[in-house]
Image (cartoon, rainbow, N blue to C red):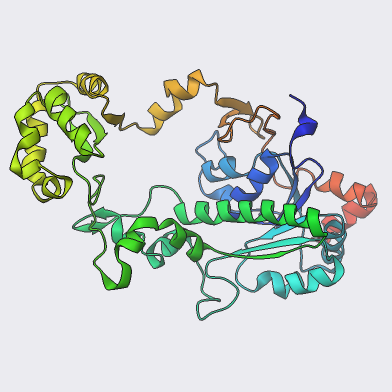
Length: 396
């Protein structure tokens, strides 16, 4: 497949980004072929570079969200730095930023100011709460948005709220920023006009609250916190086998319940047991049913349980660790892992979900801090002496 077929080849993205939401958005644009120039603070860079050192000395967060980008260190408060960013934006298609509330506007980089000079530019501002409203100036981190959006209220056990194990609010915001930018590029292709995208983490995660939000419609009670079990369907969740390993299973309808009783529990009479005759009644008597299931599984290994569930065509899954996910046979069979370069050597990376038969994804290096500064400045007309002078004054 030709690299020139990538849908965003020829698109240039400037990103004033840190942490997860904006970098995840722009990495996906880079996956599709866009040139992404990541603006970082001289000497410090994206603070996510320092979150940990788990990937051969690099940050796990940074490795995940920053492949295929160019790193330009630039002091946006320096006059020459401001001229450089303006030159770059004059040739760019998209600006993405998730600086602190009001910071971009304070640097003269609001959508209103930029569109006066660059009417075709797509400006995507990612923030915790949006550009107006009473929460506009509040700082927002992933856990705080999980809390504000009600995610914590329905996640965890009956006794304790639990956050998601990954940065779900950042990921939601990054995904919606990505899709909004793609839509804005299509629109600009039709009318030639840029767009301003005001993307709120709170609104992104509120959208993802899905059925729990509507389950509590007009003051109704929300689904209870049920750990890894389904809040309203039973049996649907984790069950421990005799070898101590956990198997996840799920039933969706009465036909499956009948087969589950006959094949898995090997007691067809349970299907007509009044306590379990509908999902509502199984939910009501879930503890009694749980003990029956665990009793059957107690003399079986997890592998045997899965085999019996597969025989009955009951949906099931292993509860994998991260190490087991790295070795997942399905991902290996579909050749979903590739190596990408980093400043410390090659690391494995998952190909973006969605194999497309008309192009391959861009899977290029994760940049060192400021790795492309000299090259980018040279394309803007700065010679070696001028670049040295900029570096000495702290502009880059």
